[in-house]
Length: 372
Image 1 (spheres, helix red, strand yellow):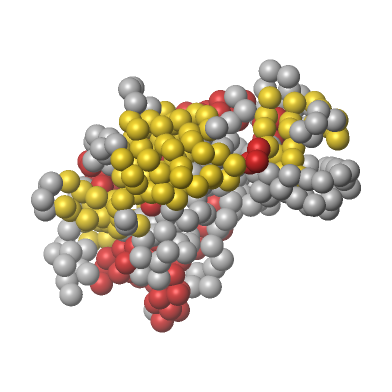
Image 2 (image 1 turned 90 degrees about the horizontal axis):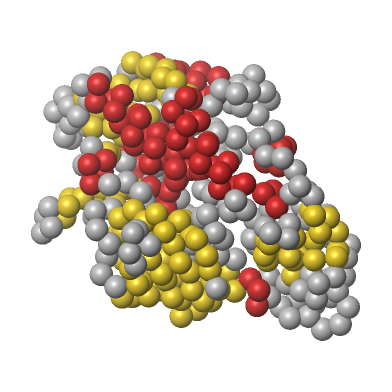
């Protein structure tokens, strides 16, 4: 089924199996495919955690098997200016940003898209699990969830606009991951069994606190429980996120008496960060009231259609690995909006993205400013 008719498509080859199979599928469909490997980070590229050299070797051997050209492009300067600087600003303000959302909006679908157009491409493609559909009635492009519910990545792509979506293909968005792996093995791709990367796009698998230490000064302070008792000392508020239960260093501390949300041995969770008083507040038990939120405000909204959806009932995710939750949208001025939740949401975290859906259609979203 040659649907490509020789159209030039530039595929972002990461060294992973999803982008590799994407390139293969496009070539099968008759597209003129060129691979590009994006290098986005080079501060410590020789370290044990930075795998970009290994990834490039994998991407190059994939290109060889498929029979396409590959180009190595360095976007590290763009990345530092557009993504990393913002990432650090957010952490220093006590919020928890999502660099993968920023990276998609600023690098993969901006710097990379511009570069691909200069190469004479008509489209770009990535290995994301999402889909694009042209709505004949409105003439607009819609961003849809990937068909594999366990792998859907529309959350990370919600800031893409009409111009970007009109030039983007997501070949594996129609497939379950198991089928992608099967295709990779069948055609003999060298990375068919390569593990999925789980690290933040530029940090890789390295210990996160150790990485942040280089860029953010430590300001230790007290860890307190809901009664105001000091349980220990934190290493700097930037290093903690709401809902976190690992790495608090207070595992042996027990609350006496009946607990809201947990028993005597219930784990501790980060519940609040008081920047002014440099205090980390923790509570015991996953279901503690301090971890439940009924509403949020978000700003810096970006809508796929170019305008906000109508007020009313929709679904949303306030973190990536989460089922869609019903919510009521109230758009505000200057790119702000509010969401109310019939069911409380757990550990809604400022700096993360609140992403809105109508069925399988991703409408866009914004950055959580506060929750209550």
